[in-house]
Length: 191
Image (tube, rainbow, N blue to C red):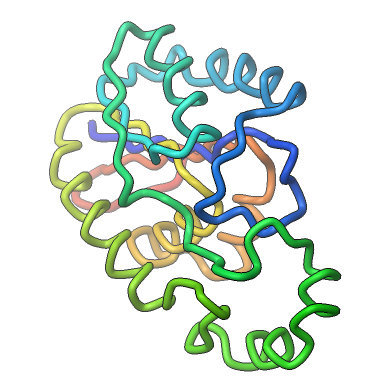
């Protein structure tokens, strides 16, 4: 059986802020979450690990890799969307500093681009280019992908038929683990 284990990185001090290409390390809560993630996935038989190269994901992946004695393959293409001028800001700060752009972004997402940020269509193309080959490489093995909430939401809706609301809810927690198995050509969420 083939399986993909999708893992959201652990918490940083930028929790609750736009943190696309910013690169904070896990905070104390995140360090605790890393241990919990490693414990949760250690019996899954992971044989390949791919990760965003940003520290919050890479450190999570490294701990899993060390536990399973597997090399982590860092992929810049698995980074979160770049939030441009909004990087590091909370939503309240965005509404104060960019009131018109914030309003338009809510009304026009995903076609509206954050000032200085990455277009959603470019983000989706980047994730597709990284993720689609991973689906083909999973035959008969268990592949872990450690990345970011926006990436996971896109992957879950695009490749695994999750509804937007379900993908949003399932990726909310830092260190969340979602395992998906392929059986008879169909991908089925296990957790």
